[in-house]
Length: 565
Image (tube, rainbow, N blue to C red):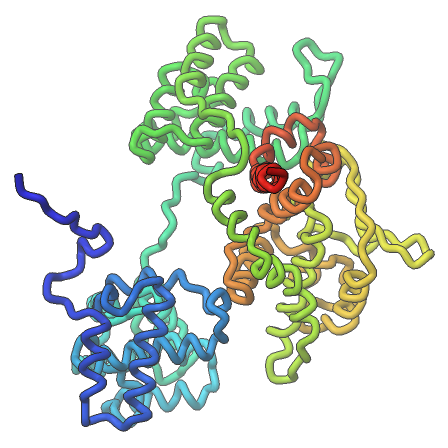
């Protein structure tokens, strides 16, 4: 029987014969064409990249397709490096590969451009537009190198640029750089008078499924509007009426889901004019057809959206007083695609939370707001500095008040931040503002109050007009920032500053983790902290978080017993 060592799957797509970093380091050591200082820099860059990916130089291939996705996930702050130090390390490693022809050398000097391209690029530089320069520089040099004149640039040249990026980019996403170049080209067409009047079409990354409501017959639109009114303003005395109005957010969600399902029927080749009322959606044949269309997008795997849609159709049949056999069939369909109720946190959140059990990582997160507020606000980048402060303020509040991101984004300076006049400040959410319709109240620590007051004094006019009543406003001051936009900003800010992957909802898990770690079994306080209506829900979500403190206590007990002998 022949024994074979298992082939490492991590290297399955690396071409045979590809040199490893260790080989390049060995060649650099005896390369007499380099100055000693340059040789040291290139070797240092290769070693730092090896350390960052967690492998010795002997196991790191000089393959851009292998390197790029791994380096793209690395946050310099997690390595204890500044952004500049990490950028230098990547640049030196890439230069070492380029020195031996493993990737193409970058050309970004204006002297390398042809007369036509140099004139255009001079106009870009003269405009001072900081959006165009980083997006277009490499693309302009690429088409120049491939002898494409400005008036001849077409989408096939942009596609070739994307292919070149995949072969030569080792840290940044080729797709992102490609889309930035195409968007930059089209932007230059509008902003730079000398730029060629050529549009490069860029396909949307989004798959649009939901159609506009106006695509459907007027009778369907009227049915839908009538249902939403009944759900929002019920008549409890009417036969079959609802006793309680649904929340506006719930009504909006139901509206979106019903339009989405009607659109799925159209994608399954049902004519829009045939969907002339809500009764069509609850026809068992149509319901199954639409659900099968949704399943076709997921490889016949049910999802939360599919499960919720099927349950909504089942409930809609009850509201529309459909016959019993129709309701039974829809109930059966809903049961078949029902997802298993979630117990505890998702695996992704557990993995992210596990990283926050390290004391150093916790300190990086806990001290992030103070560190950002301690930095001066330079005149040259005032907007960026104020935006960083706004993000830091959101983080500071979430660390003490683990509220939902929707409530955080909508904080009103007078309604939600109440100052009774005794020096205390309270963050107050009334029952109509919370998910489970229970009021929530936190007393804000003095350091957070000082941050709020300091930020409000300097945020205008860069972030919003004067007298804007929202703590996290839209730039026009006409309302609060969107919860999705704020959540995305916080994730990027925390990753950039600390190297931690921390979404806004994870702050709630982080709060309970710390509380239960210090107070095993303290679920009632955790329930109140999160605003849950029942302690059973809190236990269901977080029972696993006590494992670390429980196992540590048990280990201490065993060690104590050993000491008695």
